[in-house]
Length: 143
Image (tube, rainbow, N blue to C red):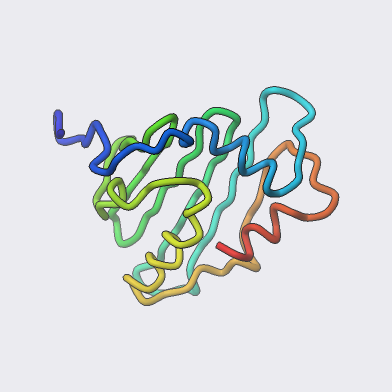
């Protein structure tokens, strides 16, 4: 459904486990937050292609999402129980967004679709999780 030019609900079936995705992600990486409020953000850029592409991923206890920008266009998807569009979805990614576990497949599909590669080794990773083993960095390298 579109309202005021904004997609307001997903086009794909909602899975029952979507609400717990960030907690599942923590367990997979064997991380334990020190507090109930935590955040991890990842910023990826391509290999200086024209137009350049940027992907920003944010993961919090009860929500995750991503913002993909390329050539002046933007898709910003947030998942809190079910995927939804925040601002715009110029690339039609709402229908391709399912689970945080499937995010790496979607990132590789974007690279293939637009013939570029993100510089995973140069990713900017920020957050307040204690990660002495570098689990988040390894996760980013597999995106």
